[in-house]
Image 1 (cartoon, each protein chain N blue to C red):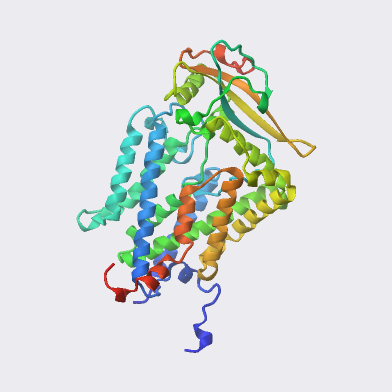
Image 2: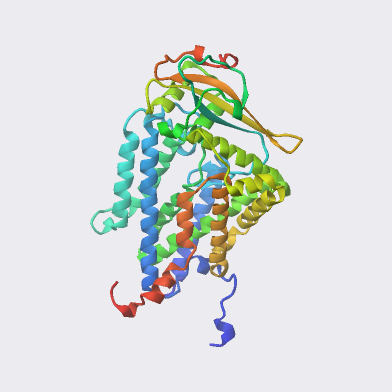
Length: 303
Length: 164
C-alpha cells in the first residue's frame, strides 16, 4: 500500500465516517461505547425524575407540545402518574443497559419503551409554555440506542450505530439552528444589539429566579461594546452553520470543540447552561477510545 | 466480517428516522421532542416579555402602575425559593389570554405550593422590553396579579385592565 493510498480523505463516505463498521474494534472503543450508553441512560433517568417531580405542581395547560397535541395530557396532572412513569423509565433503562433480552422475551424493546415513556413525561411537564432544548440530544441518544437494540443483532455494530446516530443528529440539529436564525433574521442576525436584548432578558430571568442580578464581566463587555457583542453572535452563527462537519471523522473533534465554545459563550453571556448537552459534547468531542487504547492497551491485561 | 450489511441497515434506519423527524416537525410547528428545528434565539431583536415577582410586605398599598425595573415597590423575591422555574412563570403570564379565577388559582399553586415562609404575599409582574431608536433597551414592569398564602383567589387581586 502506498503512502498516498493510506492517507484518509477529508470527507469520504458519509456512512463509513459516521459508523465505521469496517474499522477494527478495540478495548478503548468497547469501554467508550458502554460509558456513552451509561451517560445517555443516566441522563434519561435524571430527566424522567426532574420532569416528573415538577409535573406534580402543574394543574393547568397553557401550551401543548409533543404527544400532548394528540392526547389529553391532563391525565398526567393532579396525581402520582409522573412519579410512576419515572420509576418505569428508570427500570427500563437499567434493564436495557443490563441486556435483559438474555432472560426476557422482547427485552430488546426496553430502551424503545423507555424512549416513548420519556416523550410522554416531556409532554406532561412542558405544558406551561416553555420549550426547552437542553434535553434533546440525550433524547436522541436514547432513541439511537433503542433503535440499535432493535435493528442490530450484533452489539458491537449496534453500539457503533448508536454513536454515529448521535453524531448525525448533533450535526443536523446545530445546522438547523443556524438555518432557523438565517430564515428569521437573515444576515443581520449577529447584530450586537440583539445580544443586548438577550442579556437583559436573562438578567430579568435571574431577578425572577433569585431576586437580584449583577452582570458579569463578559456581559458588561458585550453591553458596552457593540462590536464585541456582534463578534460573539457571529462566532456562534458560523459554528452552528458548519456543525454538519461532525459527520466526518477528520474535522469532527475541532467542530465539536467549536460547539463547546459556543455553549460556553451562551453560558457566560446569557447565563444559560445546556448542562446535559455540554456533558454529551465533552464525551463525543474527544477521542476517548484512542486515549484508553494508548494508555491501557489490550496487552496490559484486564482493567 | 465486512461492515456492508451493517452499513446498509444503519443507512436505512437513519434515513427512516430522518423522514419521520422531518414529517413530525413539519406538522407540529417545529417541535416534537426530541425532534426539533431548534429555533431558539432565531427571533433576534424582537420585543420580549418575561415575569418577575416581588414580595409585598403587610400594610403596603397596592398600585397597578407600570414601573422601571429599578423602581419596583416591595421586596426582592426569587421564585427559586419556592421551587419554581422562572421561564415557566414568564410563559404562564405572557401566554395567558383570559385571566379567570382558575388561571389565578393555577398561578397561586405554582408559586405557593412550597412557600419559604407564611404568611407570604407576592405581586407577579409582567416585564416587557424593546430596542429603542437610540440603541438602548427600554424595560418596564406591569403588576398583573397578587397571590398570597393568606389570600383567597379572587379577580379583585388582578390588574383591573386584565379583568374579564
